[in-house]
Length: 182
Image 1 (cartoon, rainbow, N blue to C red):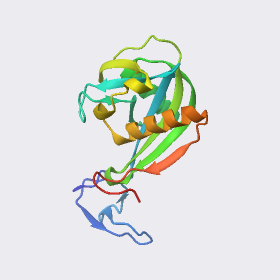
Image 2: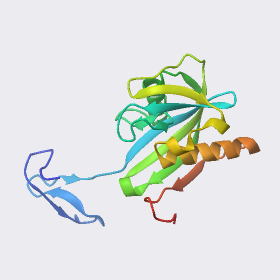
Image 3: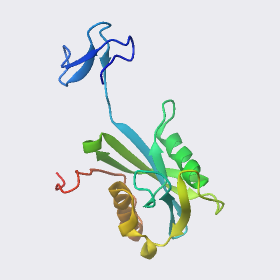
Image 4: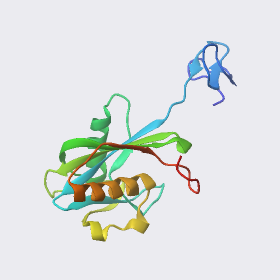
C-alpha cells in the first residue's frame, strides 16, 4: 500500500500506539489501514451418496475440480455467501446447511468455511465461473485434479465422517506447500 484510501496522502508502515502489529498508517489524517484475512465460503452439496463438484473456468487452478465456493462479500453472512457462491458456480439450490469445516490458510491470509448441504433437486448447471458441474461418488472423485487442498481435506473428512454417520465441525490449519502441519 502506498497511499491512504481516505485522503490520498502517502502512508508509512509502523506499529501504531497500543498495537502490536505492523500497519500502514497515514500520518496526515491518522487513519490506520488494517489488512485482515479474506473469508472463502462454500458448500459441500450432497445428493444421495454423491457430491457436487465444479470444474473451474477461471484462474487460479483453471480446469481443476472444486467445491462451489468463493470470497464473501461485504454485507452478507458466511452462510449467505456460501449459498450465493453455490448458485453462481453451479446454478444449484441447496438446503439444510450445516457448518462443517473451518480451515485456516494463514500463509495466504484466508479462512475457508464449508457447509454440508443438500441439493434441492438435480436442476444444476455450470455457472459463469465453471466449465462443468458433476455429481461424483466417493470412488470417482478426481483426487489428483482437485484445485485446492482445503477442498481435498473437506472431502476426505466428509467421506470418513459419513462412514461413521457423525459429522463434527472440523477446524484446522493448512500449512504452506512443503511444510509440515503445526
